[in-house]
Amino acid sequence: MLIVPGCISLPMPFDVRDFPGASAADQASDPRNRGLVAAWIFCVAGMILVMIALGGATRLTGSGLSIMEWAPIMGTLPPLSDAEWHRLFDLYRQIPQYNLVNDGFGLDGFKRIFWLEWIHRFWGRMMGVAFIGPLIWFWATRRLDRPMILRLFGICLLGGMQGFVGWFMVRSGFFAEATTVSPYRLVIHLALAVLLYGALLWTGLSLLPKPAPRLDGTRRGRRLIAAVCALIALTILAGGFVAGLRAGLDYNTFPLMDGRLIPEAYARLDPFLLNLTENIASVQFNHRLLASCTLILAIVAAIRGIQHPDTRRWSIALGLAAIGQYSLGIATLLAVVPPTLGVAHQVGAILLLTAALGLLHRSIADRPAIDS
Image 1 (tube, rainbow, N blue to C red):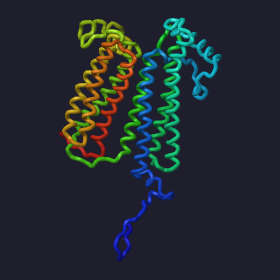
Image 2: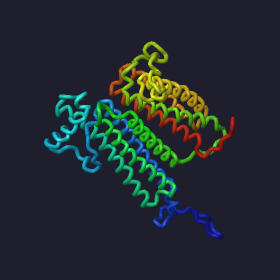
Image 3: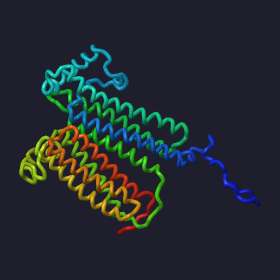
Image 4: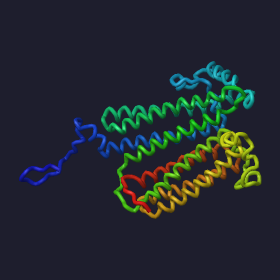
């Protein structure tokens, strides 16, 4: 609005933030720029979701150990000659997985597992390009304020760490009599992926237009949603140990395990703490228990949130995602973990976390809380 003394005020046909000389703060606060940055961040988060699905497919098909070299640059290209295929196949035949699981399946069999792992790694490289390239451009054009720059560079470092941990995990399957990767390293790799996805999702949501404050929210309700988020994350990590030990191939009945509510072999390892991560019976029971607690708490949070118009959509999404994910978990178990259902179950866990984080963010954005 242009105001001239003694005259009427006239609307300005431009915004000061449209000028190249506008300050970085003006550029970063422009709703159009915030929306553009948010769209980019959500796209990268979507790529991580695809990456998690590819990782699940790689693990379920036993493809993860097919590439024995760490070549961040040269590994971008697949084998381009018959000699290169044979060289990589010869490397694979040196590890225990080939001798104990895939002995004699030939070059054609090797190619089948190789391509899935190659796509998994290639997608990771593309994620790096999709994040770093736009990040530099947004920074150079001053569409990011200082706190956002620091946050995004921190996420970038986390992504680089995730790539390194992925190789650290793969190497654990090359030694001794191992035919799979270490469950501990697998869970670390999964935890970083979930953390990276959650950080991107939360950052993207923080850039969207914020709702008007309301006074009918409660700290108790927000603590409930936060507890749901924590339970979902814990259940996902417990699922990582189920995947790492291939525990889903045993006790394929529900709700009982070998005819008992608590399996007889639950505490067979000594010391007891080893049962939490190395005992198939304990690991699967704990995952079931955490999933059941998550379902109950998520439904309670969803019912509570549906009562308020501004949290209704996220609440409905949370309730449906919780029921769907729990049902999918049961179906996957009863079917003895076919790859299709196994991947769907892994993706469903991330979608459930998305709904919970979205509801949590919506419930705390610029809103004063009162105790109840």
